[in-house]
Length: 469
Image 1: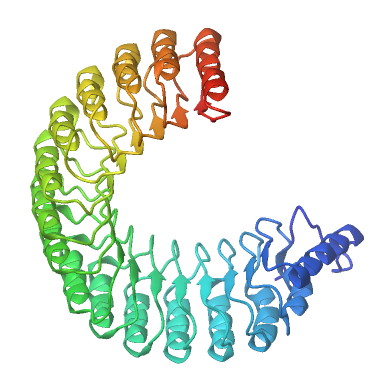
Image 2: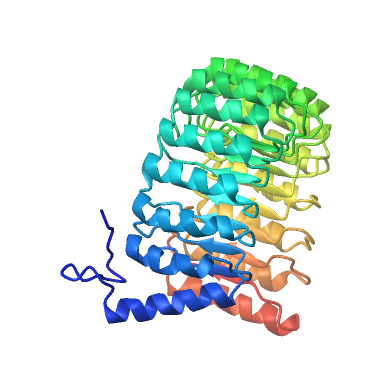
């Protein structure tokens, strides 16, 4: 079956490219010959278009990155790539995401990459690939000694596919990152994957977001990560229902791992109990710079545990706590510590039920804090009074805060006037971005902020402050 498209239509009678389509594909072919990076995503040129373009990749010594995503390409079109890419060792990155290539397409790509010695990154996200396709790719990974990154997010890979990929990890010596977010691994898939991790030495990034691995899967996965012989830097196990019991295993890994830099635990319902375990582990960790704890049902108690951890941790620079009912008391605990402790540079507190009372603590902390550069306070019911509290702090010279997000906070013109006056009053404002989208500003509030922006530009030699309404 040949896929056809809207942007580059094909003639159903002659099955040949129409003149306009051929001309446009000719332009794309020239790009392949002239540019290092070519983005042809979303052009909907289908299988015939890819067959036309594939010839331009044979013996091509110029293009290094090609994006063919979302073009209606099937296994039929990929056959053309399979014929030419073994002849091309110059192409380094190929994106085929959003094309319904299925298992047959994955098998064809696998055969192609067994012989290719140039490609470093392959993206097959949302490509209708199931276990059979994953098994074919696993066999390829056993033989390929070049590929560093493979992305298989949002496919239909189940336990047997995970098991096959795990076996490939045992033999593969080069793969650095594997992305399996949004599949169906479950606890059994995570357990199988862990066995591959135990032996593998090359892997640096593990992405298993949204696989329903649960507490038992987390336990098995962490066992594999602890035994891993290489240096894992990135772990994404968000949205996996690991709960507080699973958080215990994660905490143990945080304590032991000497290479972990980035950890995503988003939407796992670890609660205050799990947060306490994570917080205690952070006191002993000397490498982790970014952690996402958003959407974990963390209350004031859990926030207090994190605050205590920040007193003894100067490595963590990015903390995501959005979508947790932390409330004013939890924010108070965090704010007191952040006045003079920690090294948090990016702090995200959107949808945390902070309210006017809570933002007063944040505003007070900003007068003393010297590390926070990005602050997200979206959807916290701050209103005009909350905006006024922050405005009082913005009048004080702060050399680090550059981005402030106040979207969805029911701020009206009075709050906008206060913020505008603060920007004018600050003798040396570091801030360069304020988001006030989805509030209730009229043209009067918008004009006041625009005038403040112009004032800063005039007084400070053209310095730009971007304000979004």
